[in-house]
Image (tube, rainbow, N blue to C red; front, side, top):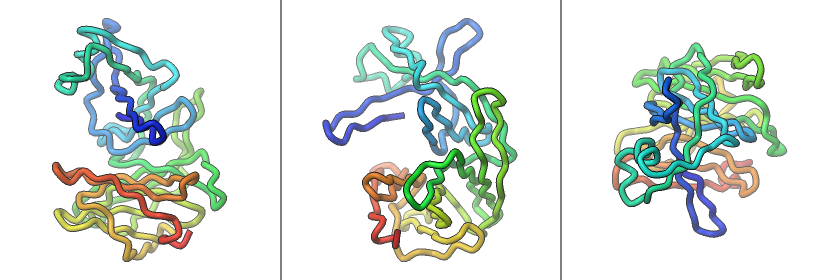
Length: 229
């Protein structure tokens, strides 16, 4: 996971880790399909393994062998220091948990809810809306579930009643779907080839997406004005 400081053109790499029985940290062996960040709590869609939670306030600075262990092959050229976020909980969710997105109201205020969706090659993938767990009971509360009949869904976010869904299309530009969540329509706004997650940026009034294919890993921002927001 990488944090980017746009003002200073700097980035900070943070390894997602789990604590073993001996107390040593090892890499989180998951396909991280999406992230949702609330305060110090980071929720990660661990494809096929529910939602994993990490506490960013308890991130650890590792050195030497411990640093190399959590960054693996990426450690080459990263020096002997690594910053690690440690998993605190695993939240079971009755979906495949392929991707994860945030929910905002029409004024840009973040709501304590997330959208969790399933990637499938057919049109049977589901998207569920859940309240995030408080720090005591640790469970996601189901609000609603839909099946928008879109194959290869890769990301989802919501602004007011407008729900945006990304769809990958092989080596063709990705497709953006827009609607109320039950019957979205395909937008004429293209997404990157190999598009994955979506993220809403209320401050800059942008919808962000990115491409996953080697040599095509672009990050693209779409102004809200182009989306009619």
